[in-house]
Length: 102
Image (cartoon, rainbow, N blue to C red; front, side):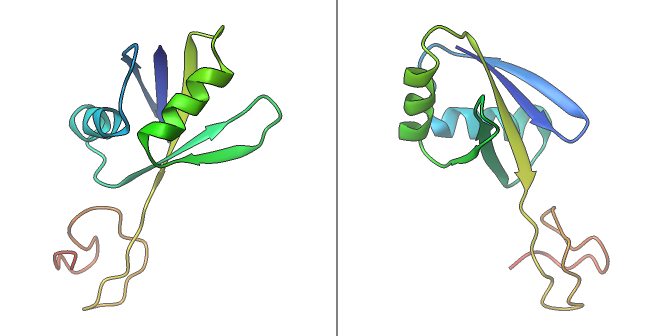
């Protein structure tokens, strides 16, 4: 199955017949340099579903047995810095003060 991984302006193709959730996350971290991806699948009706485990991947494959390409969308998970309280951090270090995420 071919997965089109979409994050903001960039897209990467990931092809694997029976991928696990961990394999997809590892690919995203290595190829797209995204630390904490949150995957979402949007069906034909526009309803979105979080993809949190291999079972979710398998359910998508069952529904789309005929289709060979699936779009997975990444939402960056942000965190609040305990030092300066900046809330929109998406990297391991605070984007404002440089403190490491705890």
